[in-house]
Amino acid sequence: MRWPISEPSTLVLFRPQISFVTFFLAQKSVKNLVIFGLVFLLTVFFGFLFNPTLLLARAEIIEVLVEKKVPRSEGQFTQGLVFVGDSLIESTGLYGQSKVCRYPAPKPDDLSLKPPTLCLTLKDNFFAEGIATVNSALYLLTWQEGAVFKLDLTTLEILETFFSPSQGWGLTTVGETLWRSDGTDKLTPHKIENFAVTGGKLSASDGLRPIDNLNELEYDQAAGLILANIYQSCRVAAIDPKSGLVTFFLDLSSICQMESQYQKNPQQNALNGLAFDESGRLWVTGKNWPNLYWITWTPPSAAASIVSAQSPVTAGPPSKSATPATSNSPDLPDSEKK
View: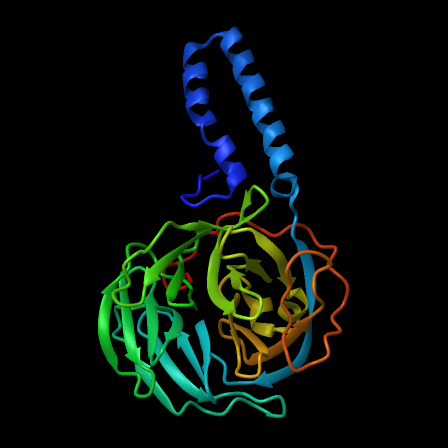
């Protein structure tokens, strides 16, 4: 387990025991090992006493309902989505193909997504990643290049270039702070002025279990939760930005099963891309998917919940599937990663 920089209170009870582990095991003494065992059991006991939910938590898994499917052109290696007024802005990746495009925002009665009205193509040595808006600017991550571009929302012209200290995957805005994912369980806060790191990292977890492979991000202002695609899975984690705890998971397996591109290559053509439109509808898609989906779901039976607006929510019962995958992604060629 990787210890978080910003952890819930119960984790603090565990942290001092790291030094005990090192000390007692180094002595190679049965007596010391017994003492360590007692210390560990006491730590677990008091951790449970003060916050049993943290130790035993298993976030509810909720199946989604597809309210609308809107066809679109194939071949878009989707990395980020964001709605701005009556426009949908999408970033797409791969070296030599990365770009940012603006589309007319899809509507529930649209037969297909209209063609883009404006695109910015990046240089071949940049792999575009997640996007987020702050005021009148659009921020664009790159995967391994360390560059973060600030774009004009109207013209998509690059205004400034900042530096990211580690890989860029997903990006979203919470108030006046940009939160970035890097493919681990960590979310890093950044200043909007210069993309400098501000404050400690947040570790996403289901109880004490880290949730790795966090990818595309979207903030739900109504619920105060960060939604995160879990790379190469068909689930979205709803994360409390204060504690890092996952409140619930959205299960989109039924959508993945409908997508021919996902069925052909679930590793490369993974579920990725989620954004709320101006009416509060949540739209999702995937890499190279030929469709956008407007989804709704039933609120979880406990804890905070989020529900897409403007539609009766009649999703099915919670999934009986296993707990979310948190293992590292399998190795892929550089051209197919992310």
